[in-house]
Amino acid sequence: MVTAEQLQHHLDNCLTGTQIEGLGDFYKGKVRDNYSTDDGRRILVTTDRQSAFDRNLGLIPLKSQALTQLSSWWFEHTKDIVKNHVIEVPDPCIVIGKNVKTIPIEMVIRGYLSGSTGTSSWMAYHNGERTYCGHTLPEGMLKNQKFENPLITPTTKDDIHDENIDFFTVVESGLVDPALWEQMVDVTYKLFERGQQLAAKGGLILVDTKYEFGVDEEGKLVLIDEIHTSDSSRFWKADTYQALIADGKEPENFDKEFLRLWFRDRCDPYNDENLPEMPDEFRIEVALRYIETYERITGEAFQMPESSVQERVVGVLEGLR
Ligand SMILES: Nc1ncnc2c1ncn2[C@@H]1O[C@H](COP(=O)(O)OP(=O)(O)O)[C@@H](O)[C@H]1O
Ligand SMILES: [Mg+2]
Image (tube, rainbow, N blue to C red):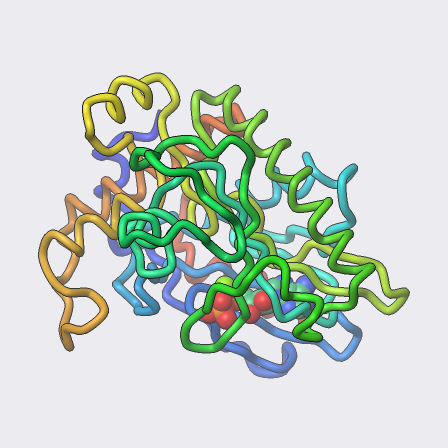
């Protein structure tokens, strides 16, 4: 078990970002630094940058490692369902993937009526909507209640802000070819089911998540980006869930929702120009959650770094040139 005391020593040991000359075409994402190489690889460096509300909120120590290692574990444990992009994991913070043509839809799948952001199912339901991304929702559902069957609620991929789209019009809109769409839907249900089963072994509920896909040169569907991390998914603690929601309280979060709630309590994160700075104790608490999620799901002990993460990662990247 990693302790707050241990993390105290790593508050400044954050991976802020990289930009290595001569490694490949550089794209700085919200969280990841991407390098596309001439020979068709995509080097994804997850940083410790924390994003939410489409904004950068600061740095969370060891987040990169916790997320990258968790995602790698999931890729390994779902590769029988769908091909994925992973070629190699040369560092706990770096994945080398096959660079593929991305499909411009994010496959969001939701097991529970939840969320607090504008695009979430709960906000729509709460505002009286009973059709959500084309799905009809029954009357009388409680916040955070489980759906009878998980809902796929796709969004269009956009640089600034993702938009929900109707599940039944994706093909009509010409964004995805029908046969490919059918396969994406099938794979999304299977991945989510696997995710829920394996998360449950670690005492967690996989509430919702999103998958990104691409197509390789043979036209095959490939799972890209990251899978079932605390950045792309919501996790709740399973053993306290029932009692808390019956009481009208929020489930115990193991993901970004915890962070979102913290900001919401203190500011208007979509509109305020300046957001409050995360205090050290809070950064540690967020980091501990990311690490605990990794440990619960994989059953493996998180290995604390022994040197500067930034220097180590830059060193590995330089060696890849
Ligand atoms: N194997 C891959 N091939 C092509 N693009 C990929 C692959 N894996 C991930 N990506 C893309 O790389 C980017 C990852 O960086 P991220 O920090 O998530 O950026 P963003 O802020 O754009 O979401 C995403 O745009 C994602 O779609
Ligand atoms: Mg992303």
